[in-house]
Image 1 (spheres, rainbow, N blue to C red):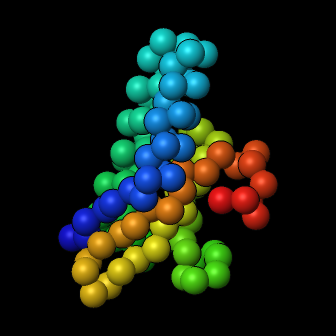
Image 2 (spheres, rainbow, N blue to C red):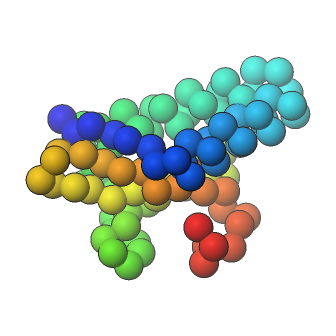
Length: 96
């Protein structure tokens, strides 16, 4: 089992997105947060199941119900997964 850690930027993106969804509709932020946590739990169990898509062996997993991807890399020596970004797909991918 891998330990999943969110880098500060990913934590901020997650928090900002939660707040935005919650402002749109009460409870929607919680649904978003729960979906992200579901995918983070998949990464805990098997982070290799999602493909390498970016330089430096960054991988991504798309969140099914929300227009976001989780960008991460695996540190095998520490059995850790580092989440670099919780990225809204309408953003410029060159700026993450």
